[in-house]
Length: 356
Image 1 (cartoon, rainbow, N blue to C red):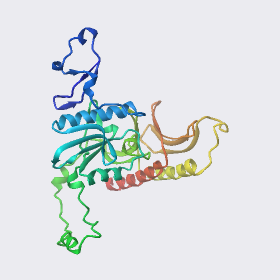
Image 2: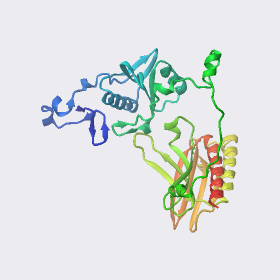
Image 3: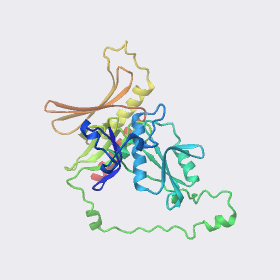
Image 4: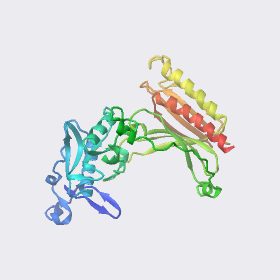
């Protein structure tokens, strides 16, 4: 096994990674053919208790920074005043707009960190910071567009000047009052945004609590179909890099707004405020909590249901049946789903009002 060094494939970046070789090829590997040994990984050391996924995220981020900033120093698990960054890039001299360097925090199923406090720690010490989640990675590349640079992120907010001398507060005050003026926008401008014949997302809400990478794996979306109908989609994404997505979309009518509100109310009462029968007390291993039946479209039966699983987890399911074929998506939820469904119902009603 060898290590393929970082390189660019067209417009894409590929970080260094392992590759198996045939036995006959091993003797021919050299630094000239893009291969190196395990020793070339340098600081890519796995920490005790660290998952393979987290190590992979750090290694890809390390390789990307090393490629983009060849004159800087890049280290794994390096500290900035007692705060250990997963990957730390340092400049010999401060470099605008990044400051002293870049601190990388790779988040993999870790919801215990105080993101705001950690971000302030780095910015206050002149380091830019980027938080990376699973969705930021694609193959052997990572998207660093979420980088928070020292300039201007470390500047104090104008409203937070308590304790400063009066002259400083006077210099930072607004010099002229805000002016509001209504300007009509030409119809031709709005016409340029015409999305007729396309799927257009109207609103989206997440159905589970957690940091972005966790909560974004279960969602509810309102969209307008190419035929002009408003639809509801429930979807989920499997764990892991490039996890598969599963989703079901159903057509809704205006009367379904109240059906969704009633469903959210019953879900709160039956799912989170009532005592449930134990698994031994149930006639069936799955226990139905509540179901909403939608008007849907002609020849299609659509419903949203909540059930108690054999493991006492609350599971949300959106399904539809057409010509004997049933399509369904099911996902585990928490109380976040109650507010999300209520919000979806309100936004859906507003969308119907705008369409009418």
